[in-house]
Length: 214
Image 1 (cartoon, rainbow, N blue to C red):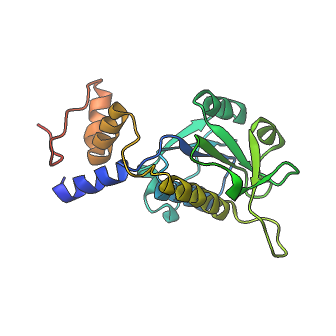
Image 2 (image 1 turned 90 degrees about the vertical axis):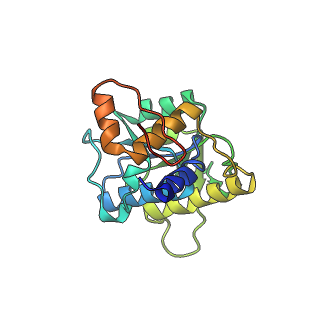
């Protein structure tokens, strides 16, 4: 661990947003799944969520750029439990879904705890997911096609959330709980060592100003 690498890790972690996330419902194509995680990393999402009908997560694709190492992923057994989990934590769930009640995605206040719900490539969010969501959002389309690729839609919405949060000063100071910050920093800096400490049930050691530990 070089001091430069350690400073880079801290600079990224300083901008992580604990109250901005994505929920992917049955996004089964690896390149789309990975591209959404890459966008999540780019806008500072700390933890993403997924529901997958096969009971597992698709293999990460090269397009992820290694983002799976930097964005924690929580997999839920079904959409009901996933949305309930988010709402219990205070998130407002916005489904990317064409409906009569849908809002222009730019009209939403993403400085509030926000979860963007994205559906399967061919079918979009399920009827049950749309029913459980707090609101629907759409990206206005001016051409012949009526929808964007799911990973592109995710990028459009998430970067609008980033813009709003940047203007509100959300990236100006660390927003993670201090203990979560400390634990995550060690896992990012020393993933192999962190696995050993977890396996042995031991607490992570403290890092000094240069990122080293005794």
